[in-house]
Structures are given as structure tokens and as C-alpha cells.
Image (cartoon, rainbow, N blue to C red; front, side, top):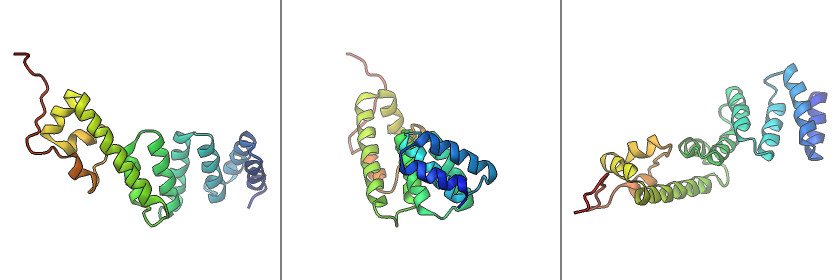
Length: 168
């Protein structure tokens, strides 16, 4: 471990996040693909709620080690925090062997289903688009129909969506 990464690790433990970020910046200038520095950077960014930055760091990590399920789990959580549910679901699906990932995916599916149900009630344009193609309507709004949610999102027999109705 480089000296800068060691100092960053000590700063993280002391919750001196700004100092840790500076040290990690120094370490990554010397070695842009240093896994330890990148992992520590992602942890600090997560703690600071810098989800866009976490995603950028995770993309660098995944370029070096695409089979690490922990990177996909953190990616899923960061994407979910940003409201990018479809991408989040795909990330969680890539790491289902990790403890808690299956539950996180189920929670995300449930959340998506409730949002779709709310949109069906309150958004006539979405309702009309959904009547034509539930999957396309959901995808264009950033949802990701999984094999579990797709059945729940389908209109029930007799349900019809209308964009406009005459008051007569």
C-alpha cells in the first residue's frame, strides 16, 4: 500500500473525509488504477452522498475487475439513490449472491411497482402509453421491468387507459 493510501485510510478512520480525498487524489495521480485507493475513494464518496462520483469511481473499478460483486452492489445502491431504478435493478441482478442483494432487488422492484401504480392513477399520458405497451412506457421513464414486476405492471382485464374523455 502506498504511503498516500495509508494516510488516506487513517483519515477515513478519523472521519476526516476532505483530507482522505486529498490523499487519495495524490495516490491516484501516481497510479490511476490502484484498486485500494479507488475502493477507499468510493467509500468516502458514498459517505459524503456523492453518488455521481461514486458511480464514476465504480466504473473505473469495474474496468479493472468487472467480476467483483461488491462493486455492482454499491453501483446499484448509488443508482437507486439517484432515482435511476432500471440501471439500479440491473446492477443488483449482477450481484445476487451477495448477502442482502436479493432483498435490495426485491425492495427496488416493490418501489418501482408502487411508482408505476401511482403514475397509472395520476398521469393520463403515462396511462395511455402504458395501455399500448407497458414495457415501453416503463422503460421510457427509467423503470426496469424484471420478470417479477412485469406481471404486476400489466393492465388487468377490463382496464383501459384514456388520454382524454368527453365530459358528456
